[in-house]
Length: 213
Image (tube, rainbow, N blue to C red; front, side, top):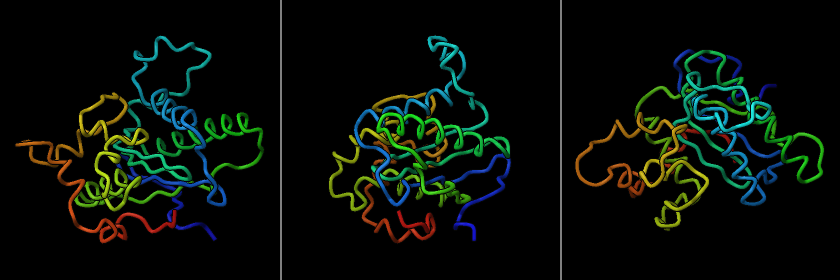
């Protein structure tokens, strides 16, 4: 019986919440290097080709720039979340397969292990509305601290796209403008206020994900 949210088809110009975890809920990121390696694959797969001129041709990966947009992400010790917009119906399948395989090869070699790293096929939930999109971005960015009790720690968490949304860093492979464009541009960063709204994050969680990570 196929796992819940294990999709086989995707729509052109579709938005999706992509997520997966380690096999048997095991950790897939064991140190800072592991996180940085996974993030480096985002850059290599999603940056414009011209930005990769310094990368040796033998180390270049298949490029998905123009096919896949990564709107936000968060990496946690035993799982990851992404919001992806794809421009062709096969882009997500290729992108996630490539990044998962590449990272699993790195991880298994480093830790001298064999076998699957991820728990089956990644999951994908269609995002059907702006409401779902913005609340899902909040859900993902709040993953390191769902209660929001440590705002400084959450903002400075180094393994998510939140610092792009705070305009503290700029990574050209993060397409955060679409989400931020749904907020008023007046006053201080409105996304920051939204991020720490007192509404219980799990009140909207059932609209976003139904997979126990």
